View 1 (cartoon, rainbow, N blue to C red):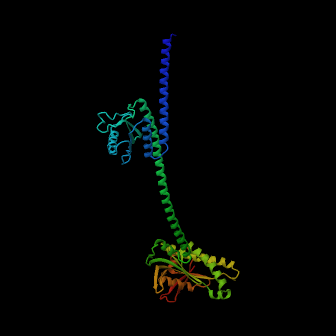
View 2: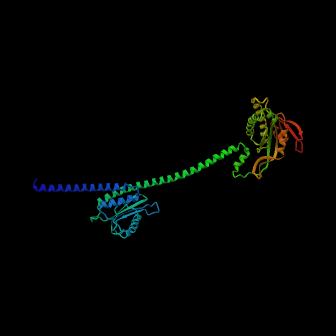
View 3: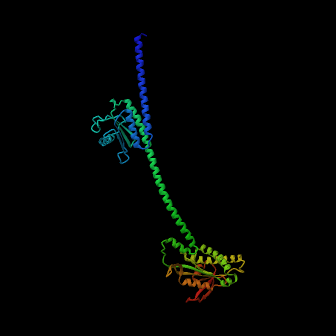
Length: 428
């Protein structure tokens, strides 16, 4: 090879090496720029900080003194976010409005836009040299605007390619920020919900405590208040008690024969235990047959049966009386201090009576009572007084209702104390 050929070949090799070096320098610049910008925009989760850092790093790496970014959110009522650097303050509104108008135009590919074209020159100031539209999500378009390079060179294809890569990183960072903001809002809402839940739970706890107190009071009162009255109070918690009204009822009176003599023989304490054992069994029999203890007086009980069915009233009373008599025999056999079972005398009468609550006012306050008043109550008590030896006596009105269910023995007519007419009595 002659010297001239060798020189030419060396020049070509040197030119190729220069081109490769230039390509390597460009790639190194692009990578460094990408690294610097990414490092800054991923260091924050605030969208405005991300946009500002992106704009500053991009301007610095391209040697640009002015730039702006507009980020719109079409899903909200606000214009979005606008960050401008290097422009006069009085030009910010002009820039923002121009950018908004551009983004409102029919969507085109994310390609560079020449702001000096006749289509856009009337909107953007001359200091804007390059426009690049982008999209974070379909409802969130954006626009990057840059001024001229300080070195006076135009933006070339390599610049645009690098800017596209940088914008892609910006989009990812903004999506992350949006996700973080959504998570933060969810956490905030969750905290508010937790506070509200704790408040509600506190109120519920207080309410439950009140319910527990009321249930405790109710349980205590049920030991002293007839079940009928308890049901009335539950239906009318404001304290309004219904007036007495005429109802069909069967009324059972019972007392223990020779109660005083037995007390003298056994003593009050032991007799009290015996009475409690008997009356506990009696209560079970009464409630089993839908009765309600209305009054207690030492050795006696007054029991009401208020079923809507007249026959069921009488049947409930009679079944209760027979069960009481059976239970009395069993208990008597278990009580060693009793030489024989107690004799429980009972009287039953059926008919209409005034049933309900009655209020008595006095200087010491008001007192409520619940009972059945009228002639059938007095007759039931007098019939019970006629019974001896643990027998069950009933009136004719009760007998007429149960005659198809029990065997009855007519005892004749009796003159009862404070009752004007003779009363016919039957024995079960």
